[in-house]
Amino acid sequence: MEEKDGQLFQEEETSQEENILEEPVPEESTPLGEVRIVEDVIAHLAIKALQGVEGVQPAVPGFSAKLGLGRKPSGGVRISLGEGTPPEISVDTFVNTRYGLRIPDVAWNVQEVVKNQLEAFTGYHVKAVNVFVQGVFFGQAKTVEAEAGEVSSVRDEPEREESQEGETEPASPGLE
Image 1 (cartoon, rainbow, N blue to C red):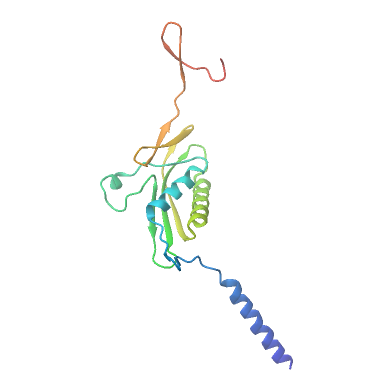
Image 2 (cartoon, one colour; image 1 turned 30 degrees about the vertical axis):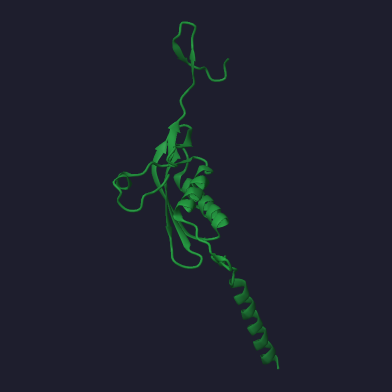
């Protein structure tokens, strides 16, 4: 009888493990129809996530992207949707990092933030977030959205004051 109890106990344990491994998968189809998120929307969400990472700015597209070779990255992000229900997302990010920061740590932060944001907003599984560091920038840089929806970087310039003679002089920080 102990063997039976032991076997029953083992069977119950394995069925509990199977239940733990089964996670609810967000459905792409509803009784009203299918829900699909296009790559451009996912790319925009990834760009917004990149803007939240300290010491990172999207890189301008490379030479091959300007020639139209391969998939065009938009705002430093390229999205690939895999087959399946729900689709898997692969993200390539092209970034510049601020000088003085440890690049592997910055890249890891990019991966975590982009993955978490995309999974939270889309319900899709993020298969990979690849980070391609294209360059380094010095000082603070801010990003602005151009009219075409692309993100470009603008270097902060020191403010200038006009003197009484009409000449332009650099403003003294903190002194007025």
